[in-house]
Amino acid sequence: MPKLKAAVIGAGSTYTPELIEGFINFKETLPFSEFSLMDTDPKRLDIVGNLAKRQLNMGGNNCTVTLTDSLDQTLDGADFVFGQIRVGKMQARILDEKIPLKYGYVGQETTGAGGFMKALRTIPVMMDIAERMKRLSETGAWLINFTNPSGIIAEALLNYTDINMLGLCNCPINMLKDINNTRDYEYIGLNHLSWITSQEPYHASYYLEYYENHAEKLQNCINAEKTRGEVCLEIEDKLFKQFADKELCVKPPELMERGGAMYSTAAVSAVASIYNDKGEIHVINTKNKGAVPFMDDDDVVEIKCRLGKNFVTPQPVSKYNDSIINLMKQVKKYEKLTVQAAIEGSRDKALAALIANPLIDNPEKAALLLNELLEANRKYIPKFFGGVK
Image 1 (cartoon, one colour):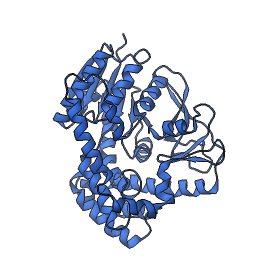
Image 2 (cartoon, helix red, strand yellow):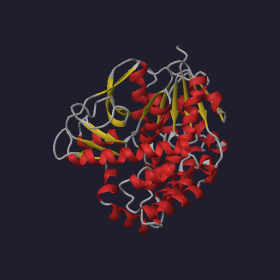
Image 3 (cartoon, one colour):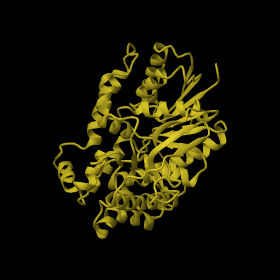
Image 4 (cartoon, one colour):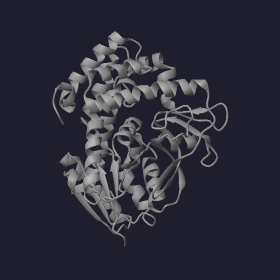
């Protein structure tokens, strides 16, 4: 059996049992001999990690499973690294959702001011993971990232490091299920800003509602008794009680309430295409390289690509309209400024990024919002306060 190591960073996530299920389903084509599960929260790691062991044992996977809080240990010798971290945990997400509402903006986890703040917290940590991968992982190791905002994280890592990485999301798979077409389709967009343009009318990602119906979405958030983060926190509490049951050996169906359906399918099938050099088509976040004519070559876009052992080949797109062009360009400007702000710790670029976002319509309010968001996240973003991380 080949020595193939998978490292899961943020393994205390409630999504991990679904990822493990994917490994079990693909055990014949992905013969992992070791799973290293890493998390900074020992209680969550113990509960989820032991469920993962029971799942793999039940699934007949003959492999070693290690639980660790050491990033270096989990990366050492890894062939595939799966990123699913949440800097600041769910409490930081809840603040991302609530603070923008005070200024009249939606604080959704990946879109608008909420996604912006999550990116500022997360990019420095992901950059550190990338640097450690270069030092500790096997030559040619891949980072498969699901950490949100997935597209902006990919924008940072693919343009400011030289690691092999894919930005993945479950939205493309679910969109294809909606139209019942997984073969002949054209896909164009950015993460959580995407369209299937095989035929008109174009089939759009539901995240576009935040751009097209912002006032309605804002009012819904204001009227809601709880934010999505607070709801997810309650769901996670229930799931962890189930996960802790030593008789549980499979992913519980209640995990579907947490969101992220088809997460493992997207991740594990993409890895299988790489490892087995299949050259299969997958929708991923990667550098454009001319595939989308109106975007720059180094812009990270979400499009169809062929995946093999040593290649990621974006597939050219030809169907789009002026609305798609304008919105993609505007959001990409926001994403690039957000990446620069996070890497440099620049308040000026952070403010410019917020103002560039189509959902932020008032520079004065944007400045006040930025100050409150940064202050609420001070311990996670030391560069913005003169510190170094």
